[in-house]
Image (cartoon, rainbow, N blue to C red; front, side, top):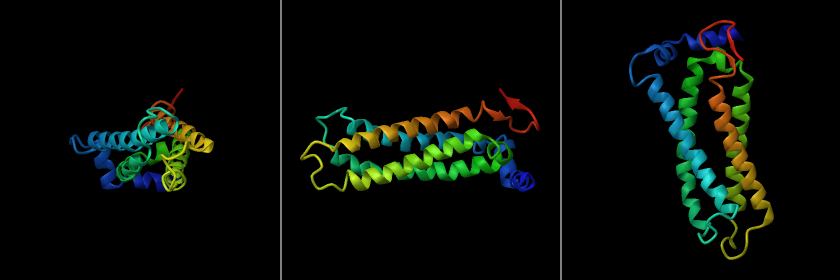
Length: 170
């Protein structure tokens, strides 16, 4: 398996991402990944906080217009995350923290889909108080996105160190 991951890391594109002095390589890809996460997690956070009762004078239904933008942020992350993973496959795919991050992202996306179907498809939305289970979904979603961001950031500090065989962060 490590041989396969090493081959991915040594593809010309992967090496360019990590080793190029160009601003369009690692720095721009990582910045784009951060912006994508800001968009998807930020929109999820706005929706979650509103469902938890913050800004209760603001109707919920208009927030549905934010879902396409959230998906845009998600796809930015999917593309840039795949590129970053290719460039450092042996480190990321041997780090438990990476899998923790991916579980949080997966669950956060599933919760966005569930909330759109269960909350925003409700014809009585904004006409009656929100059902109690909606707050549970919102709390779970907030936990997932905070977990994804935290685990993603900790990738730089936990587990194997990129490019140095055998060296680990403690």
